[in-house]
Image 1 (cartoon, rainbow, N blue to C red):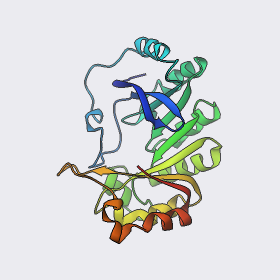
Image 2: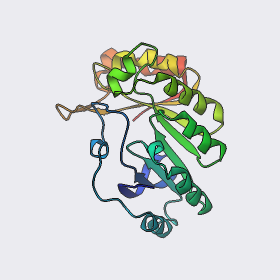
Image 3: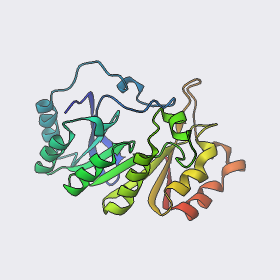
Image 4: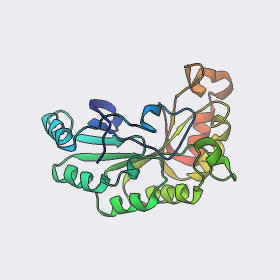
Length: 226
């Protein structure tokens, strides 16, 4: 599998676990506020898979889990084979995805190769052209199928939304409608690509301080702000 970079130890990427984070190159989305833009059309050196597995073994006493992110990992043709190696080695596995490949998700779920899935729901897919306008990707049937896959699979999961001001923040209730009944919904800070400012609603508590509780009550069993 193609691996662009590695973070040996992370305390925040896999809930309840200390994890090693692997970053895969390439993505079929083009979100203006992407935090990993260097991976979108990555042409740099790749980490050899054997050396990655060796490093994972060296850190296993500390990091009992692996979080695979990107980019978009489900674009990698070697993903399933790599996850099988991780499973054989006894690691817990978390996968980050944009939800564009529900067939891949179902295959990995059915083979019991994933313990936790974090799926980005970028904006509401209820409005024609909305998803493509934000991400450059227009197949919302796939996004909806991935949402349903997570909610019915029995695998632990969360949906994540990066609150991009002026686009996503106006969409939160519509996004909530898309994932109604979800176990967990995480709202994430956004770094403005123009100003570099990091923000989320909580900076404007007078206007939005009560909104999180309303959203959580209506759409998700638990809501996280991170």
